[in-house]
Amino acid sequence: MVLVGTRIALWLGVQLLVAGLLVLGGGVTATGQPLGAAAAWWMVDGALIDLATLGVIVWLLRRDGSSYRSLLGPPTTAWQVALGALGVLAASVPAIVFSAELTTAFYGEATPPMFAVVDVPPLASAFSVLVVPLLAELAEPVAYLGVVLPRLERRIGRPWVAPTIVVAMWAAEHAFFPLLISDGSLDLVFAAYRVVSVLPFLATWTALYYTLGRRLLPIMAARWVFNGGTALALALGLVG
Amino acid sequence: MHSATLYRLTYLAAAMSLGHHADHVIRHNAVGWPLTDQVNAFTMSLVIYPVIATGLLLYRAGRVGPGFWAVVSGGGAVFVSAVHFGPFAVEPPEMILGTYDPPILGWLAFTWLVAFVAVLAITSLYETRLWSQQRQTRRAARPATGVGTKR
Image (cartoon, rainbow over all chains, first blue to last red):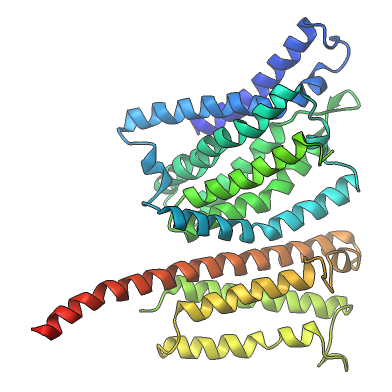
């Protein structure tokens, strides 16, 4: 719970901080929409959130006397990771289709807002492609599936309940990034869209975590291909 | 050795398949024989029920293993994806989403379809892992038997 709280608080805090810095730097006026302008940096912000998540994970591991490797599940050979990742990508197809249809229902043929708002200098763009997806895989699935899920399972003791809570919390976190402004207030429709559009992905990956015998590496590898590919497409201007 | 999880996943996939066929019947816009004279993807997909029933009997009798189920589930996932999601889909999502009134029912039917394909894919991966584990166990047991025979 500390991890989830930390991540959500950081998403809010970092975006507010970037908005403040943009106002101070004169990039945007306080009466303008600093939060909306800060949203352009949300992918870069993700690196800070993931670094902080890793910090909390290391703190928890030291307290419990276990290792980061133990969170990734049983030993997995390279070919098992590669084959598993292919399976994870194939199993994610229905979620991709659902998300695409939902985007069309909400925004028609327009680029989804979380991609449309991204507007950063080339260096930050390269960082978003090379570093952010890697950090995200080392932190996000490890936090939710490697740390939070087993602890909830031990505490609740009933199958289905713990993974359901984890998927719900993981999806809810997505409502906080990026924070978009619509008609002078937070765009709650977008927040709801974000949560619903990621739900099938997160449910699929959580189910696959069990299916693959609690091995996280294939899921991390597949997610890295997926998220890294999206970041690359965005940087090359193929999206948006 | 039979896997209780494999049985549960098979029953779940069969129930989701029934639900999706019920959606076809309610929409009545992508159905074939026995509801119409046409033999199409709908008709072909009905073959899954005798395959599941036969597979369950053979699995119980120990004649087929998780490899058989991995092919059935994986084949099902590919078939349903190709029919509904692929670039040459004969029944794209719009045929489900645009048919129901109120539209929320269309979204429910579409969500059911997405969950159905995901269950098939996840089940196939589980069965592939089980199959691989059983092969490894068998392979590991073989040299021990060989040593015993030499003696």
